[in-house]
Length: 540
Image (cartoon, rainbow, N blue to C red; front, side, top):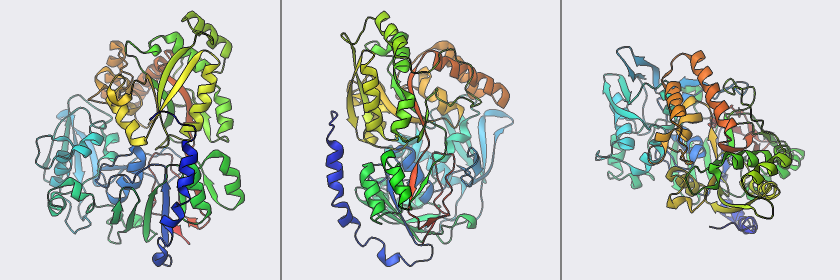
C-alpha cells in the first residue's frame, strides 16, 4: 500500500461508527466487583489467543501474559526500576553443570489450566513441540512464526520428572530472556478443539490470570477473571477485560473521552494536554526501546555507503522530533540511551548538523538537486511504533534538506512484522531499502545479535538489513556465551560503539511509552517494560 496522506482522515471517519460498535458493551457487568476494564490497542486486529500471539509485544502484552503463563516472566510490580526476570511456571532455572548448553527449569507444582488439567513438565514439552517441532502431529505454523525468532538456536528439549530441559546449539547465557514469549498450553485442550489450532483460537486454554469468554479477531476479545488462579497475589481485581483494536490514535482518544474505553495505548501528543485538563490520567515511563530505521546492506541498497548513513543521522532533528511529540520521547542516541551500561564510547556524535550531512552527501555524489532516492517501509500503527506517520513525515522533511528523497510504503502492523522477518530484498519488503520498526533492548541477544549477526538473517532471525561482519559475529557469539556480567558488559560496550560509529541504523528516538487512562482506573503500575500487568487494575 503506497503512502496516502488522507488515510488518517478515512480512519477517523470510520471511528464515527465505533460508538455504535461499543454501545452497551459491558453494561451488564459495570457493577461487578473491580469493574470492567476496556482497553483500546494500537493494532488493527485482536492478537491471536494461541499462547504465542502475533502483533509483536502488544500481542504478548494483552493476549500472551493474560490468558497464559510462561516458564519465566517479568517482574512488573514496580515503576522505578528496569523490570527483572521473575519465576513463573518455573520456580528455578540454571545451566546443567555437566553441559553448559543445557538449561534446567524446575516446574511449579499445584498449577491448573482453565479446564482443570494440572500442569506437568510434559505440557511444557508439548508447548515447545507445537511451536518448534515441524514433524510433530500438533505442530502449529502460526506459533512457529512467532517462536522461531525468539529461540533461533535450539537443539532439543524434554522432561525428566518435574524438570524441563532445553538445549541450545551454543552456550547461551541469554536464553531465559526468551522464555516470557512462550505461553504454555496442553495437549488435551488442542484435542478438545478437534486437533485443530485454528479452532483452538475460539477455545483457548492457559493457566493465566484471565480466561477467554469470546473472541472476534476483527472486533474484540472479552476475557474474564480467573478466580482460581494459582498466584493469589495476581488474581485480577477487575471482573472483565475487553480488548479492542483501534489503530487510529485520534479514534482511541475519542473512545476514551466518550467513556467507551478506559485505557488507551499511545495517545497522540497533541491530545495530551487536553486529556490531562479534562481529568484523564497520562502515564509514561522509560523502557528498553529504540525507534529506528533498519538500513539495508544488500548490494542494490543506497545505504551500503557509510557516508550516506552518517549523513542521514546528522540530518535529522531529534530535538524537533521531541517537540513534535510533546516531549514524550528521548532523543535517539543509539540502540540504548547515553548513560546505559552498554552504551560504550562511540566517536560518531549523533547530533543535528545539516551542513556536515550535506558535505557527506556531496562526497557520496548526491545533493538537493541530485537527491538520493529511497523507499522506506513504515506502519500506520503498532506496538512500540509511537506515532509512526507523523514521525516519519517529520524525518522525510529533514532528509529532503540534505539530499535524500524518501518515499514511504505504508504497511499494516503485522504485515510490517512479516516484512521484517523476510529481510531486505525479499518480496514482502516491497522493494524498500529501509524499514522503520521499534525494538527491545532488555537483553544482549535481542539488542545486538538477533538484528545484526550474519546467521540471524531470514529464516533464522530478524537481521533485516542483512548486515554481515565476521569480526562482529565473533563478538556477538562471545557476548551470548559469556556468563560473567562484568565481562559481558565490556563486550556489549564494544558492540554498541561499533553500531553507532558505523551508523548502522537511523537512530531517531526512545519511547516514553505514554498511555491515557480514565480517572476511574486505579491500581495500574507502569513498569519499565514492553510487558505490563493489568491484574492490579480496578475500574470504579
